[in-house]
Image 1 (cartoon, rainbow, N blue to C red):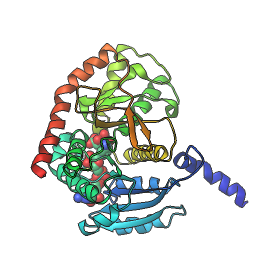
Image 2 (image 1 turned 135 degrees about the vertical axis):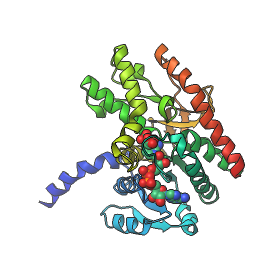
Image 3 (image 1 turned 120 degrees about the vertical axis):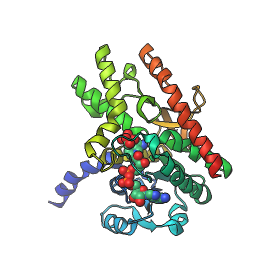
Amino acid sequence: LCTSLISSIAPKYIRYASTGSGVTHAKKVAVLGASGGIGQPLSLLLKLSPLISDLSLYDIQHTKGVGADLSHIETRSKVKAYVGKDELADALKGMDLVVIPAGVPRKPGMTRDDLFNTNATIVADLVSACAKNCPRAIIAIIANPVNSTVPIASEIMKAHNVYDEKKIVGVTTLDVVRAATFVAEAKGLDPTRVFVPVIGGHSGNTIIPLLSQVSPPVSFSQQELDSLTTRIQNAGTEVVDAKAGAGSATLSMAHAGARFSFSILEALNGKEGVVECGFIASQETEFKYFATPLLFSRNGVEKSMGVGKLSEYETKLIEKAKKELNGNIQNGIEFAKQYL
Ligand code: NAD
Ligand code: LMR
């Protein structure tokens, strides 16, 4: 009975447990903002993974309860909870990966950029602590506006002389997750087998799904292209409006954040060919930061896979995104100058 019980539980964990090589080299991961709408379910998914030996939960409130709760789960990782600024340094020491969902979410009628005033300082404070306590960790930034918080984080690391552009990534996985779901729905496909690269940034017009590069290959009418592109670009607002003042996407984001984290950890463990989209400092586009599919390795981001061959429609979408994306990036850089 015991053996059959274990094998019936096991498959549910495998999705979050695979190391690729079958060998586990467990890593240390911190979640900053761990008590929040994203932070709690994200921490739960991370707790289920054997890729993680130490799970460090930090927030300005409620982490002791979240930590006590998660620590009773029968998986290998050790959970430690840290609350308040005085405990931040200890939360970060020795970390391989720091995931940052700390910050306020949108309410109906707001843009992500409306969060800038509050979240810019939160991210700058947290990344400054990373620079001092875990300068070599990969930092995955969920906090919005991602188009600005990633440049802020980079400038802070530069000022501390510990900048490594392979290690600061904005999490755009939710755009990829949504694009796969919506395309699969439209075409009657299995969503778990659909991949849609999403490039650009993470706000409205700057979210650019590459529907000409869907895997497996599918073709769309112009009307389908328009409606799918609009839905993917506005999917965050769809959730904000449905939640009617109670915040933005948390559960789908927790899944997306866990998927992104597991991919990074697998690559840190030596798995080859790990690709996820993410928003990073860009060499090969005209933008200072740009999301593309990224190849991860033991070092973090090994290289950008570029944008591939774009359709005329997608080229126009990039053109339309230019002003907003460049403006968001510049705001982040300017903020960091004042902050420092
Ligand atoms: P939330 O309000 O539920 O949780 C935020 C948490 O951050 C709270 O627990 C709060 O105490 C904590 N916090 C605030 N200041 C902090 C600080 N200085 N240090 C540590 N923790 C701090 O919000 P949420 O729904 O979890 O969303 C968090 C952020 O993620 C928002 O900015 C939201 O816009 C963003 N988000 C991004 C994506 C994406 O795709 N990148 C998707 C969804 C949400
Ligand atoms: C999302 O895409 O769901 C997040 O960026 C949250 C938001 O404000 O829409």
